[in-house]
Image (cartoon, rainbow, N blue to C red; front, side, top):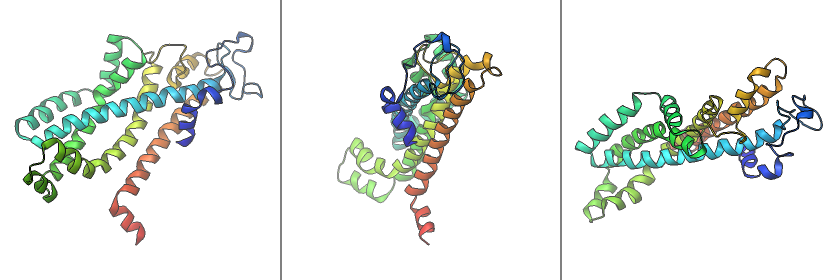
Length: 261
């Protein structure tokens, strides 16, 4: 995980070549001391494109998870805190309407309608991603809103906003942080999927999904075009899943108690 973050932050310094620079004289070159991961069908350095692809994937993942987290916190918090008709409207109708269709289909339809681009890609993936956070927030708020410390804050005249931000939110963050870490893996995979379908960030931007799409005609002649971007996607998704599991074990006091025993 740290390696991918470093690749994203320091891509201009780590990439040995310009990821968009063409070198047709060395197209489809195998890995060598000049190009450690070889070159693609246009002679572009694959290592440089993998490094810059990490920046794009993590940018999309952080933006999608951040926007989905915020929307889920707002809608789920309102539904769980106020209940009654607001809960019925948001949970029964709004959330279920978004859950009726797979998120990837909503994203494909959104990008196909507005066109490819970084902003459209982030919005498209956030459309279906916020529902999972909203349902988790709602469930956590329902469990916490009747606790004694919340009743005490309400009794002394604290506003609803202060009660939620100062008393409820700190007590429900643990599962949300774990969900966000695992959601990063899903966002990376979804971005690669849309880019593979030609609905991601348009060329010449380096994207792992678009690299896999461009490499399909050369699967047997130059398999390194497929192998290295696929490994990058796999390792990035795997690292976020491991991070989510580690955070869950670390933030759960019951797990720490068992380990201590």
